[in-house]
Structures are given as C-alpha cells and as structure tokens.
View: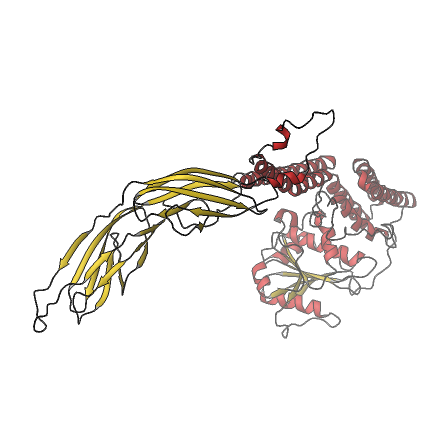
Length: 608
C-alpha cells in the first residue's frame, strides 16, 4: 500500500546506465518519451498509486472493523448484567455487625449462595386448560437454572418444563399449582399459584347417523351403524389432534376407514383414531369425523375447535436471541466507513491528477515536436536550425526539472545532453556521426504524389502512411538498446487483416482510447519502438489507430514472389497485401532497409 507499480519500463530509459550510450541520436529519440509520462507516451504503462492519505483512512477502517464487534459484545453483556437483580446480603443488615472505619470486602463466593429468582407473571384458564407464564433467573452470575418442576395440584405426576407451560385438568375445581426452580449449585425456590377451573367445557357435538334400513342377518339379529365416541381434541399451536373410540355396530362387521373433514377444504382418510392435522391459518373450525363400516353404514360426529395464532406451543427450552438492533447498527457503521474511504480515495486521486496536469501542461508533447524539427533539419543539412532545436529541447527539459521534483535528476541529465548536442552541431558545423549501415538501396522518402499513388485504392490517408514510414525509419536507423531491430506494419483494411492473422502475444494496445492510439501523434512513437522488439506485425487502421502489436500473419504465401535476400517477414507482409486492400511496411533487421508493399508487390524502398 502506498507504492506505485509501472507495468512496462519507460521506453528508452535504462536506470543502469546514462540515457545516452553509443549512438547519441538514437537515445535522444527514445528518451524523450520520458517527458510524455503524464500526457502522451507512457499513458499505457502507469499503474495505480495509492496515496498516503488513503493508506491512513484504510488503516482506520480496519481498526474499526476489528474493534467494533468487541465493543458491541461488551455492551450486550453489560445490559444483561444490569437486568439481573441480586438480593441484598442478610449479614450486612444484621444488628450484630459492628461498624468500623475499615473497608468491607465481600467475597465473590457469597453471590453463589443465593437461590434463583422465580416469577409467575400470569395464568390463563379456559376449556379446562391452565397456561402459566413466568420466568426463572439464576441468583448469581456463575449459576444456571437446571430445571423447572411443575406440580399442578391434581395428583398428577410432577413435570419438568420451561415457561410457558399448559396443563389439562380432568374436572372443574380449585387447585394449588406449585412451581420449583432448581439452580446448578443445588439451591432452589418454590412459588405457588391458585388455579380455578370453573367448569368442564363440553364441545358441541352434532351426531349425524345414516342408518341403513333394517336388514336381518339371521334369526333374531339386527345390523346397526358404528358407535363413535369423541374425546377432547388436543390443540398445540396450529396443530389439532382428534381422538375417540370407534366400534362396529354389530357382530360380523368391521370399521373399514375414518374420514375427517377439517372444515378448511381438506379431508383426511385414516384407518383409526387418533389423527393430527396442521391448520395453515387461525380460525374457528367444525371438524366432522365419519366412521365407515364394512356393510356401508356410517356415523358422523362434529366437534368445534378454536385455532388461535397465540396458542401455546409444545413445552421446551426458551430460545435466546441476540438484540435485534445490534446487527443493523454494525452494518450501518461498516457501510458508512466503506463509502467514506471510497469517496476519499476518488477525491484524492482526482486532485492529484489535476495537479499533475496543471504542473506539466503540454511541455512533453512540445519536446517531441521540437525533436522532430531537430531531426528533419539535420536530414536536410540545415545545421543551424538543428542546433537551435537542440537548444530549445535542453531548455524545455530544464523547465520540466523545475516542475517535477521526482524526475528532476533525469530531466537535468537530458538537458545537459541536448546542450552538448547543440554546442557540437553549432560550433563544429557538422552533423552527429552515425555509423554507416549496409542497405540494398538509398532511395529517398516518397513525395506527396508518390504517397497519394501508394494509398490509392485503399482506405489509408497519405498522412497516416507518412507517419508510419517515419516511425519505421527511426526504428531502422536507431534500433533498440544498441541492437538492430526489424519489424513490420500493416496499414488499412483492418477487418480483413484481422481475419487473416492471429494474436501472437498479448496485445498491449487493447482497451485504450482511440485518441491515445493515433500513429500521427508523436507521443505514441516511443511505445511503438519499444514494442517493435516483439515478434509479429503492427496492425494500423486506415485512419491511423494502432489496433494491435505482435500479430502473426496466417495467409498462404505460396504465390508470393519477392527478391532474393528478403526474409519471411517480407513474405508475410507481401502475402497479406495480396489478399487485402492494405499497405505493408517492413523494416529489415539487417541494414535497416524500409520496404513498402501493395498488392503483393514492392512499390517503394527507403535506405537508412
């Protein structure tokens, strides 16, 4: 965090040696791309820099994330402790205690000597059922409630259940309920409650008998409908269990099935009672139970039940859930912190970018243009103009050194080199010395008319073709890092060229804006010369957009005819221009010869 990563080395600059080594003009052409770091040449190689301010904000965010859960947990525990009520120590109020001017120390073990707290909140009765609500709390923090025992006062077996709990009495009357809470340290407490059951609730039962006319089965025998006796239904929340006795009406017949209509559109067929059903919604329902006999006779009885959403469920341990407000608060704080960090990072990056743009507006591009003037004047033999251009470049680099402290040493070194070239070119009256290169021809640059003729029949403009030829000449003359470099360019008819080629290496130009990939922009030339060392060809559209580098041509080259001495690079470019309406430009690695192809033929050559 806080570091800056550069994906590709700045074209033309080697930190292990001074920028000018050997061929002076070659290094001048490549090192000027350093000046374009913030505007043009190196726009593809900058990584994301995390500022120091963003680092501190992110560190603060991580501290909040680590500390917040512990703070919330401490608050929850403190709230739980505050809710506990501890009975006062009897010994403190005893009259035998003598007051002394000393500090009274209460041992921690005294807390565990208090029995649990048992509170019976309320009792609800109805339909011979009593439901008791309450709570049991340990007497000290280091003890727990082990069990709660219920004695309903009707000679039934004592039960162990959590709150709330229900009990069905067999007959009306007044009963004394006794509830005992046992603590893990052996202490217990008992609370009693009087429960009054006013009357035995008898459900409304409607008997529907469908007798079959008397059919004697033998002398003195009579067949009757089945006998059905229903018991009190058991309601457990939304579940209802019906039970009863169902017997055949006479000997020789059997009960074949029991049909239960639950009064909510559902009917259940069972072989015998009891039967349990879950109601999807609350309400009052009349359940009709029909017993079916083997001779076809039936007996139907109905029973009404009141299903309520607040019916007590089955007894069991009370569920413990954390406070519902703590989790949303944590997420609100987390989201707020993340949003603050993101906004701070974007704002700081925006401010830094504005500062960089304002600190070095258009000087790097101006240096590249002045460099072009220097080389063009030198090629024409106008040494006075070349010396003046070199001096202007030196002044521009000194200005860059003042405005960019981080690159100050590099810019000052470049300024000194340009001053040396200006003195040499102006005083001696001779151009810089270049070692001669062997080439097949020394033809000149094509004229405007020749460029228009080369571009005719294609979608390539003469300006684009001229820019590609100039880059090719620089590569052929300068090479790269002291080594001769050969490469090739295919210009125009981009779709057809892409269909007849494949990517040989990762495309370094993919995903960048077209405005920053224009071959006519001098700022991109440093990148092209850097990528010229890759295998494969550059693909450039007719309007000058660099589409790809490292492209492998896949056309059939059996019909290609080129002069002896030219290699496979020339053959592939000649072949692609045969099957597409493109222009091919090849830089020969041996000698720096520039060869221009169209329709599979050589149309122009330029010697280095």
